[in-house]
Image 1 (tube, one colour):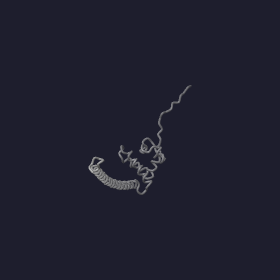
Image 2 (cartoon, one colour):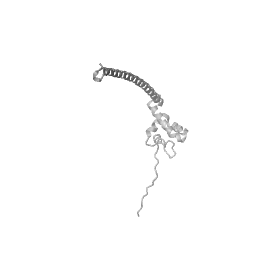
Image 3 (cartoon, helix red, strand yellow):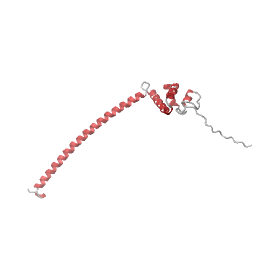
Image 4 (cartoon, rainbow, N blue to C red):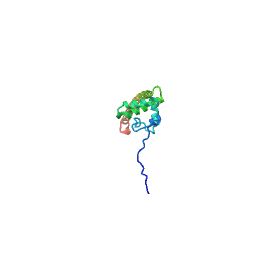
Length: 154
């Protein structure tokens, strides 16, 4: 009797990072599974530490379904910022970036001023050079007019 074992091609549902961390059963209707895959447990860990799992679920459910992925990205970003800087969170990063922008604007204005100054200096030097060239041409022309070697009358 020759019997073959036919493998069943049913996909085993892997628990999401939230359910793995919270040690609960992850079913196909898990509201966190689409946003926190099982292999990204540190992503959920930060969000859970800052906001708490039940608050994360509530916040995600408050957002319309088409924008939930963006909301989760924002929660992850804010959680990471809060873990780095518990007082200011992402606001601290924003203030830091604004300060950098102001410093760069100041540097840019200073460089623009230096460029303008250098351009004016260049224009002055070119004016002096052109004046000297005209003077040399006039001297040369005058010399040529009076020098018999150049057909002038001396």
